[in-house]
Length: 210
Image 1: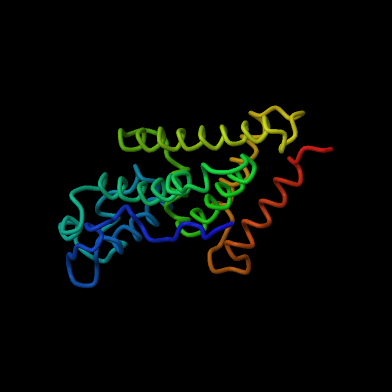
Image 2: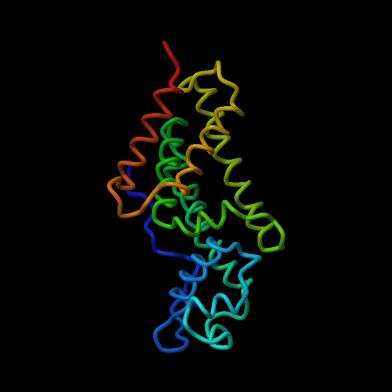
């Protein structure tokens, strides 16, 4: 397969380079905020808690973002933009369905490994705010497109047909989403090896038998 999407974020964009107080830019504030959201939960995290973890005053945070909600929006865009970028790649649309599915799964694992805290935040959303609900709908749209690839591979005969396609899709998502709970970036398993192992496990069990 070709190169997977890089870790360059589209979420921060030009705004991500905006400077605030010395020692911080918007991206570094966002990185720390996501870590705090994941540890305490988004709703339980106040601007005071964020300021304490950043070592700055609450008012100083507003040099970087207008509100806590804007931090959440930027963080979720890091995750969703990366995942959607995999599906927007021409390799996700051209060729046999099994090949396209493998590309998407590898790309998804690469995004999880590169943006682990951000995807973790996405997967833990409860949908209590409009920002969260919008993100969850984008995530469901992503899931539906991957499920359609699974169905297409099954229809073309490359994946076995004796397993209910809904079961196949749920197990795929369950396996890949579980990565955020145990994978350690920089550890002994590289993202490429992780993707190889997942693909081998998944496709060896799903390949149609002659």
